Amino acid sequence: MVPSSAFADTYLMMAEEDGCYWCAKWTKEIGHIYPKTAEGAAAPLKRFDVHSVVPDVEFARRVHFTPTFILVDNGKELDRIEGYPGEDFFWGLLTMMLERSKIGLEDRS
Image (cartoon, rainbow, N blue to C red):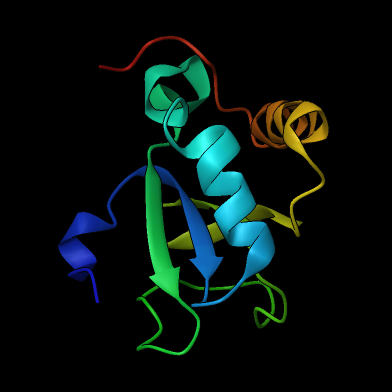
């Protein structure tokens, strides 16, 4: 489990589990580039295993699917993407999620 102090400000939480084909596909297609993008700067990625201790986050609802990408700000869920729709759709859905939550894509590094 990641200490709750590591979950400050805004980040993108990836709920995953061992053996999840779509989690592995996201990691292979997106995982290596995500931290280098404006989206990754605006909402750095934090991962958690759905079968481990649940992080100190106020979820809108329980996580049922992996991967689930949850946009968190100051410990509270703002929005989520359930599943991995493929690389092309992921970026569009993430951008819409950030826009709905009024999180800018300016470089925060």
